[in-house]
Length: 125
Image 1 (cartoon, one colour):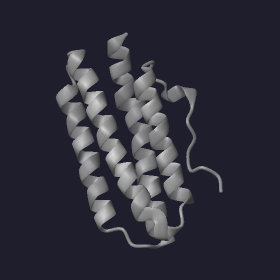
Image 2: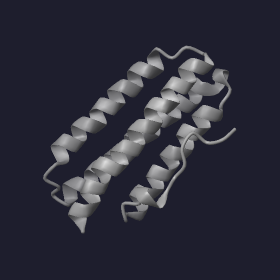
Image 3: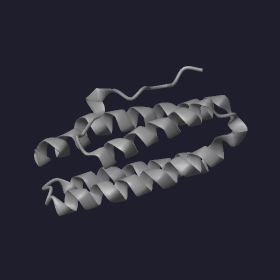
């Protein structure tokens, strides 16, 4: 099966730790897409857990850098965590439910990196 979305150099923030975490999130989302529906809850929990780890690291970096949009960025992170929590609790073991979750997360992470994380990367420069 083809990956739902692929990592591109356009997503690079210039921070090796953040970029590595972003790449792992892509890997998890693609793993979710490729998983048997019966395995999805396990992958969803890892995606949820790792997203929280990543957000914590990113927010710490932003705080240390005195990023003026930190509060707004945290709200975006909290919103995604809430949505992921809702989607995982409502997850039905169907291909359609899995594909909807993959599409949502894939679109969110791509847009978040390109529009929000790269804004922070430009601030750091």
